[in-house]
Length: 334
Image (tube, rainbow, N blue to C red; front, side, top):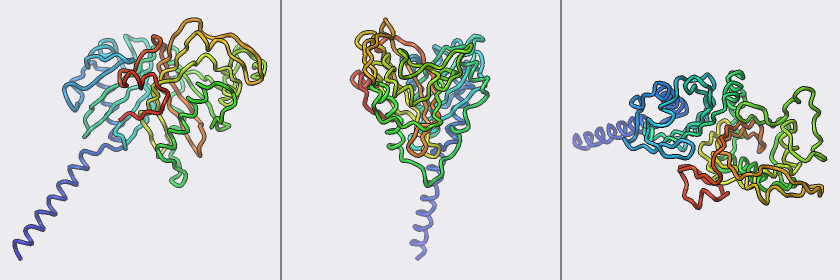
């Protein structure tokens, strides 16, 4: 009897120890945000030794280029900024943070993806947008729009796959650019790119609002839906390497990293939905490297925010195979 009791006590103790270790290894939203803050503090101090890493050879990239941790931005960053937007994915153990920083005193914007295993950083991916004006605009805003932090009522929450499917309709609709797709935009949809409104923007200097049905180029004064239905987003010839790197089901947030290519060839000549022939757009091939976050509620896109940096045409991310890097299929960063 005593032997049996001893076995039971040892077994229970073992289960408790396992539970404690499992809890210690789990990184919830607050934990992920805390690790992101520690990373940005270490970066601003130019001291990578402050980081708790999963290994000494953690993969680190900046704008698609693999570097040694401690190189690149770690040489030039001088301070943190004041703008922060987090998309924390407790399920995947990843967080993406859009933040402003100072590079030798000049404001810039970054999107930093951290993969966290057992509370240790195992991957670091950074997109750097050297847009001084954009960084200043974000800091003038003060903080992200409230919708990004608001919880979706539990009864209305969508699955990860469904949230990503809705977000991907944005990329697919833009790439197809026929003005006839099913566009999941809410009436209040609004987009900010590098700190500036790129939808529903006020006219400058009394500028009149162009008519989507007669204009030959799309306008940032139009709504999300008007821009897509105009068929004038012709300059984006391909949206590839669509990696969905963080999903927050509780808040209906989806963060994607992708590339917008401009081929400067066939895409310059197109026909609008009403049959008008238009020639316009970039005359040299180049690419936007983009980090874009979508707020999804009731199957519709509301707030959208992106940072983007111009890069060489066809550039890879450093995280995908060559084939996946050229693909427009949905990919999950794991």
